[in-house]
Structure formats: structure tokens, C-alpha cells
Amino acid sequence: MTDFLDEARIEIKAGDGGDGVVSFRREKYIPMGGPDGGHGGRGGDVIFVADKGLNLLNFFRRKHHFNADDGTNGAGRNMHGRDGETLRLHVPCGTVIRDAASGDLLADLVHAGQEYTAATGGRGGRGNSAFVKAHNQAPRIAERGAPGGKRELRLELKLIADVGIVGLPNAGKSTLLSVISNARPKIADYPFTTLSPNLGVVILDEQAAFVAADIPGLIEGAHDGHGLGDRFLKHIERTRLLVHVLDGGSADPLKDFAVINAELDAFNPALASKPQIVALNKMDLPEARKAWPRIQRFMQARGIPALAISAATTEGVRELVNRVAQTLPELPVEAQAELPVIHPELPEEVFTVTREGAGWRVTGRKVERLMAMTYWNESESVERLQRILTAMGVFSALRAAGVAEGDMVHIGEGHLEWTE
Figure 1 (tube, rainbow, N blue to C red):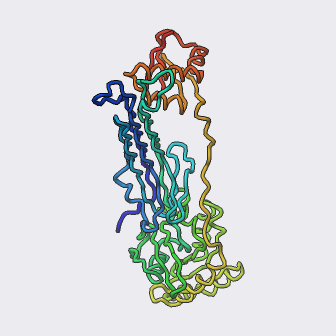
Figure 2 (cartoon, rainbow, N blue to C red; figure 1 turned 180 degrees about the vertical axis):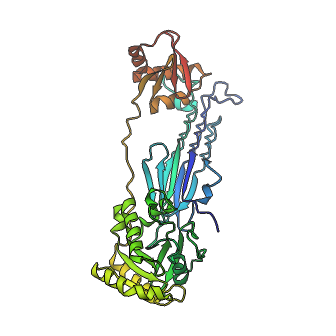
Figure 3 (cartoon, rainbow, N blue to C red; figure 1 turned 45 degrees about the vertical axis):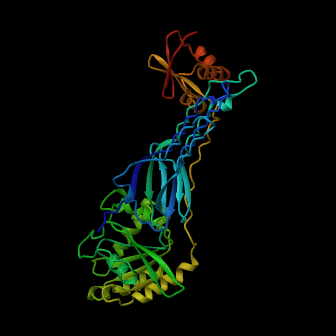
């Protein structure tokens, strides 16, 4: 059986923009041709796509770093670089994407085909043909491509199923799923046979079907990490209905019922309030038949539908499936996706100046991008950067902070030595 992977931590990097170039038209009989440096291509984005054909995150088991293509560089004769190809990462429907450091929710991909752009490619640098002005007809100014976005992400899978089958280990959940659906889970007569959730499609007729999930590992203390329950309780959150399987061979099925409901409530109170249908399993055993009247009275008093079944002999199974099929249309069609946490971004012109060791650090989206896009071997490009930083107030802010002659100033991955 394939090991189930429902969480993954990965790093993604969008493509860098291609570099623009400094070039001048040089042809026979045209000795003083104008600037014709082409622009660099845009870097590719990294986009996650919800794919109904996937059920696991196992693709991310061995590979953790994903890079989109960079844009290609421009060239002379106004030849512009090619854009980098977008990287599309396919994930199962029900995948939640979070920032790995903060845990903030970035996207909740529920519907097939739903997309989320997790990192945006850097724009291509402009060639010198873009910097022609009346006072400078032959500029030696170009831009490097802007860096693509990068981030660390945590992927979490929450299965999307209409029905969640819950109960203590060895209650017969996997056997029931195998009988009512096309799923073929591992089945044996000992606890924790099932080490991963199993999905099965239950087909009643040409018009009616639903998806059921066998949720393993629920024991007392599951919400605190006992057994396997803390890994799999989250998969019940999207279900619309719970089928609570009780072990008819247990010494006290009603105590088992209370244990599971307490674990659901401790993990997330919304789980305990989900509609339930109770199925007392193993009616082929004498002790189950003896316990059934007491359990039936208990559930009736609380308004909880209860049926007696034997998954091994299929006794009562058809009635259970019909009851589930009758109940589902009365419930909300689909669990709502979580809403992402939106942190308003500061304007890109905003920057901060802070001490860093013996030097200074200037942080800000625009100022860091300018540094990365500057050609340091072209004096006109460096002079242009200085003019922009002056206009933005960066140099004034450094002076106000106390920068001194010879101090190192760090901006992005660039380093400057301060001099007046």
C-alpha cells in the first residue's frame, strides 16, 4: 500500500526576468546608428492547480525545490528576449497552501481547475532603446531582469468527501467501505490496519452517487496525538455527514460512541456537531444482537438515526447506503473553502533603514528591485540608480539615521560603501 502523504514543505522560485542590453545599430553606411538594445523576457510564474485526478501529495515526497523558467536576455537590433515558461504544479482538490514561516493561509484549492499564483516572475529588464531622451540620444543605460518571487510553503491535504466513516480501530470501517464502494483498503483483524484515509465512490444508480472516506486512527486522546488520529482528524472537516461505526463485539459500544465524539469535539467543535448516522456493526455476533436494543433506544432518545449492520455478511448495508443517500440532499452541497489571510502590502516605494552589524540595511520592494536590476559596469546605469535613490529619499534617510563615511550599506543582495 502506498504511504499516504498529506503534508509537504517545499520551496518555490519564479523565474528571473531576462536582461536588457546596451547596443547600437552598426551597419554599413550607417556609422552612427541609434540605440537598438532589446528588452529581456519576463520570468515564468509558479501556479498551483487543483487536479481532480490526484488524491495524494506524494509527488512532493522527494522533490522539494521548484523553479520556473527565467526569461531570456534581449539582444541588439531590438530583439527582445523570450518570456520564461510558467510552472504549473498540480495538487489534489482540497489542498491548503500556507506560508511555511507564519502559517498564514494563502489559498484553499477546493474546485477542480482552481488556480493560485504563488510566486510571480520578474519583469524583463529594458534595453537602452527605452532610455532615449532629447538630451541623451545615445544612452548607455539598460536594466538587468528583476528577480522572480520566492517563498517557502506548507501544503496540507484535506480530503473532500461527502461522507466520513469514523469509529474506533477494528470497528469495521474499512470492511464497510470495501463493501459499499470501489475502494479496496487493507483489512485485517487488528487495530490500525488502516494507516491512511481511503476514498471510495458509492454508486447507487446512474443518477446517484457519493464519495465516502474511511478515517483511521481515532482512539481516546487522538486530538493530542495518540494513535494516528491527529494526522487524520482534519480530513473529516470537509465532509457533510458522518457514519459512526460501532463495534458490536465491544464490551461497551455506547462508551466507544462517547469516546469518538469527545475526540471530534476536542479537535474541532464543528466536527462533533456534524450530522451522524450510527451503524452498529458485526450483527453476525451474538453480543452485537444482544446490545442492539439498548443502543437503538439510546440513539432514538437523542434523535440520531441508527441501523444494525454486518459489513462481513452485508446484512443491513443496503439500508445504510439508502439512508445516507436520502440524508445527503438535505445537507449543504459543499463545505466552504477557508478564506485566505490577506495582509495589505505596503506601497512598493516604502522602505526602512535599520542597523545591521557595523553597517546599514535598506529594505523595501522597489529599492531592492532597483539594486538587482542595475548594471554596475555601466556608469550611466549607476548614476541613474543614484538619482532615483535620491528622489526616493533613501540617502536622506541614511544620513538621518547616522550613516558615516566608509559604512557599508546593504540593499537586497547588493552592498555599497557610503561616501559623500
